[in-house]
Amino acid sequence: MSALIELRNIWVEYGDKIVLERVSLQLAEGSFVAVVGPSGAGKSTFLRLILGQEPPTRGQVLLGDMPMRAECGPDRGVVFQRYSVFPHLTTLRNVMFGIECGQAPFTARLFGAQRRAARDKAAEMLAAVGLEHSLDVYPAQMSGGMQQRLAIAQALVKHPRILLLDEPFGALDPGTRLDMHALITRLWQEHGLTILMVTHDIGEAFKLGTRVLAFDKRRHDPHAPHRFGATVTYDLSLDRKTLPPPALVEAVGDTDPRKEIA
Amino acid sequence: MTRLIDIRPGRGGRFLLGALPILALLFVYLLASEARHADNPADKVLPTFAAMAQAIHAFTTDRDPASDRVVIVADTIASLYRLGVGLAIATGTALILGLLLGVVPLARALLGPVVAVIAVIPPVAVLPILFIVLGLDEASKIALIAIGITPFMTRDLTSFVVSLPAEQFAKAQTLGANSWQLAIRVALPQLMPRLIAALRLSMGPAWVFLIAAEAVASDVGLGYRIFLVRRYFAMDIILPYVAWISLLAISSDALLLFASRRGFPWAHGAGR
Image (cartoon, rainbow over all chains, first blue to last red; front, side, top):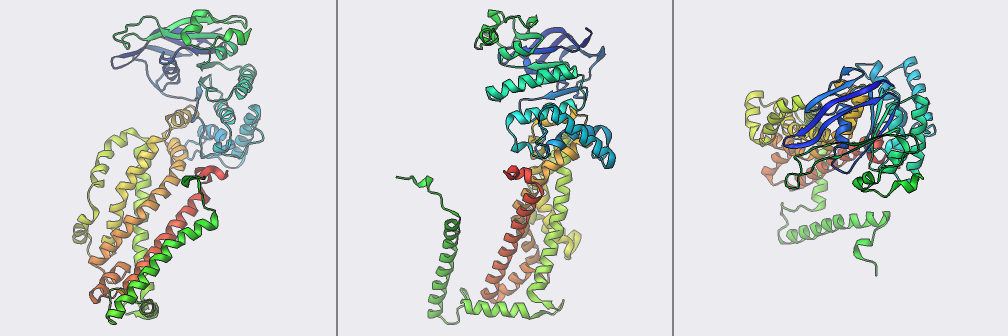
């Protein structure tokens, strides 16, 4: 498989504080990469880096062999834990937004046949995430799970080369979370997506991912906790039988997911 | 026993409770007015309701010699015109500036400090400047309202746009939105209900500026009339005028709230 994204010796620093150090890795096209790690280990920074929300202090990010600019673009879709949908637009209009931006640079609105085509495409995408019965409701009227379904449909309508998920199911109840696991797995397979998901839930990571990256600090100075940054401590390729190593389970501080998976 | 904080009045109960203090105030006024008139039948400070009715009859039938309109109609039209134009200029300017400053960090860095400086100038203090520069006509009164309201509204709208979740802006960019599309499709629609809220809040100061400007130099208008008849202690005219101004203020506030609920249902709980 070819590398879709490559990181070369990435460092991210905020003043004196080193968040990420010496991160070098490649993400393959079509993979489902789950990122785990304790709080403050730079998981979200890593995601924002690939999203383009912030530049690396040192190092290079390559997207399809081209250096990536530190700016969000339509080749990378994103779903955040919250605030991923526009509260002032109905479900359908939320999904149409991406199409409208692409086709109408000045008005950002479509009319006539183009509008009908965009509408149909949006409705189709909403049906794919199971929202075919909620086309004309506002996000505030929907449950958290439905809002995340909408956020996924909204991102997928642009056919991004990689879909970034930042703890997308963290705020959902366990039952809804299982439904979302099934949904994202199905979409990943059907649409041939490349997914990078940051999660707190190590069980979720090992259940969904084809590869799990664990971020943590290799070195720790108790007198200067910001002196050393986090890096990739585990990089596990999974067939669906790999279990997380006990040391990783302990580092992330989660309940043992091996019981859940086994 | 039910705690005090858990007793919630119903719809009818709320209406009754709300009317009670108003009726009480009217009753107290009536008693005070009676008492003063018993003492001095020619008292002008607290006119009786009968005297006020007579004054109301006069200013709703007599005609203003300049415009040949009924006095209160001429005053209301003149004042509402100034208020309306002033608020329209303020709202339009604040909307454009607020959007620009909120969405574009460069514009915020460039214009934010100027707006902040202008916002701390007490508007009535610049009224003489406006009279000198713009003359005593409508322009100076409209300018006072616009200058008084715009900076505060601009700052409010800017901070609202800035406080929109960064996730929304990132998401819009991943959906291919450019800066312009982001401003008009993401920030502007969400700003509109806030704009109406800011407008409702600035109605109070706007009336103050209007009446101040009319009191100083004018020949027609609600504020002009009040300050004109003050010379004759004509409380029987002033009090109904004040009540009329309050009524205008309450109805415009209700109208704006209604417009916001109709136009932006998603901002008011989305019909849940």
